[in-house]
Image (tube, rainbow, N blue to C red; front, side, top):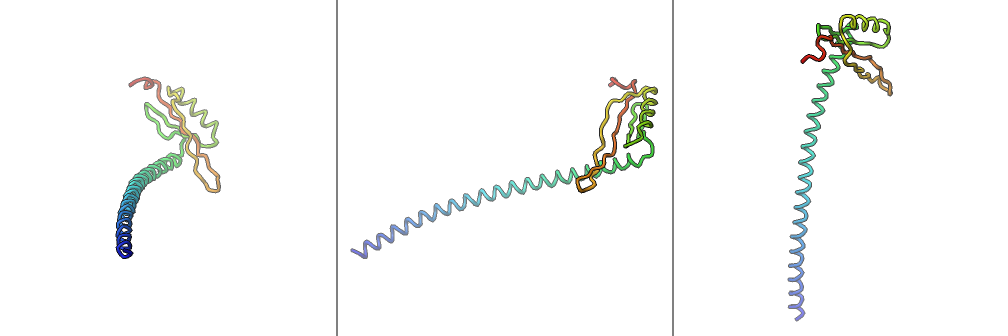
Length: 145
């Protein structure tokens, strides 16, 4: 009986090990599936981040080229049409700027918007402020659609 008992015990043990092996295999497959899902989501997010970085990079380059064009302009008035005038006020030149505002106002232009031009980072925590852009619109175009 010892041999029958041992054989029966080994058979039961073998069945139990087989069941546990299937459970472990199922858990492994589940973990692999979850890792694959995470990997796919990460790759998708990385792709989106790359596209955004590329888009922002080209926009920053375009913005930089436009600012360079503005600041290379020798005059304070960057652009002037019958409808609008865009004035660059660089650091300093306060009297010139005020005289120009007076002239534009007498011509019928009104200040409608002002924005600071971003600082240029110089490194070591220093920034160089470039100035401000002032947008004037001729009164005959204000309120017209």
